[in-house]
Length: 239
Image (cartoon, rainbow, N blue to C red; front, side, top):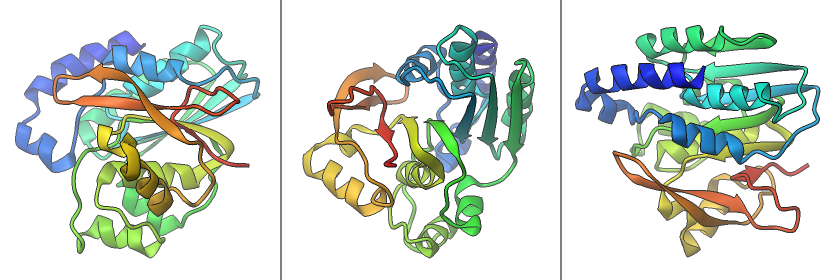
């Protein structure tokens, strides 16, 4: 199903105006990157996987995660997948792709992730896994997004950091999150300042930069946990 989603991405992306992409910080995930991100989650023996994909696009990341499950990478009996997408065209493709999996209960939300999550308040939503390619865009101090985030105690100037912070808050204890983030997040003092400023809602593992992934629009890096437990994921929510 991931390859089908990637074919759709190849068709849709060139037809999407640059102005629109810039307005929404929209950069769709190639299948190779999606597959790599899904591989970072450690095996799981949970009976039910509860997946969050915020800003899901055509569903590449969800498909990569579900394909890995179908291939035996996780021991789930079923998966509950929640995907947020505000673009009507992308959401139609997303629904089609998630419908291709058996034993998956898909909840596709046609709403602004930040505004809805903030309105509902920061609370554990029980997500065992979150996989994110968040939008990349600055948010000014008086924007609707900034005010919504401020109302729940999150102060940040980037959409990507807001998405990650909200995903952390919504994850179950021990929940795991893999996200594409810019290099600046993982650079020295910036890392410490970022983690303490908007990820302090729960303890997080210390991350270092590794695995550079080239993308047509920019170069990104992933963070991997380097503590003794050896989880190769971006972050793990404290219990």
